[in-house]
Length: 403
Image (cartoon, rainbow, N blue to C red; front, side):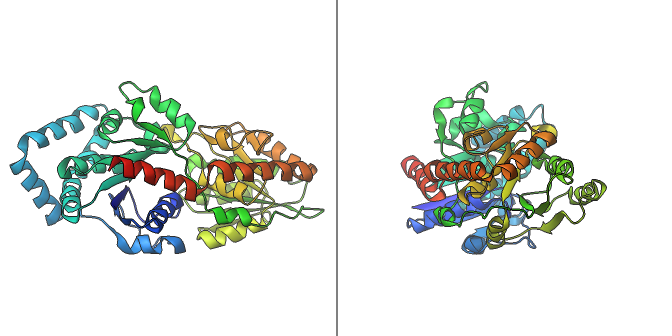
């Protein structure tokens, strides 16, 4: 079958699960294209496994002739259908004018995408993220008659619920990446809970074969953070935890990623006396990140609630860390405890609790055999529930049933 996947922006170094899913669909013999609704990042690193997807990704300009002509034809041929759509967009965003204007901005290209889907014989549209990608998918599905579905991850549902019940009602199914999301969405007014299906994100099975970490011995505890340098990631609290530990135990910390707060984080590290302990390594591709896991004794995922309710789902980094059998410290937030069970598969700290992160890192160093036992249990949980091969296959089955 022919599948179209819709995302907001492309390429994005952090959205590995999207590109790995596409690779699995192709491995199963399906034709897959990727449409990005908004920005193209021409300077972004592209993971090796995502290059085939990058070569076939496409978009239409917001005001490109193709988009405007498609909208014009649709209005002339189906004026009532278009008026109903415009009314739904306006009514659903009456309390979020800016978001509503952005939804109208993607309308022309969404209509053009619907025409493209019809001309190309697309069998199913799946949007990764419940925000603008799902809006684009819904409009394209209305125009083309092609069924659609979407995934509900984190910010895409927690920040704004405008149009969300309407999109879910028209979708063949809504894939939620955690039980937390299932429960949260099920409590929303007018949300059709019968559309929900729990299908986790995942990591490649091959990661399970990574060597286990050597004990730190009398040397430094190697601590790793991988992710964007933005508020909801909570990196400032990791730095505070390291400052609390620096006089008690030898430490090294690598921070891999980039983001708007990088300069402020570098200043914080210097202010906290972490020069020589913390290095900011910038963004890395999947192979370099895998090597960093090999260096690490422990991984920290210090997530917090960011501005506007921005929250993590279940970070793929947490899955990767446990797949590598690395002791993991994470936040008790959203769906994270489904993977990181405190004292069973890792350590949980309250969001923003630097002292809790410090206690967990100290415990890892002080009782390395227990730390490794928990990390192995985490690896077993990843093997059972969070492998991309298994979960992409389950998502593909849902798509095949819906088409």
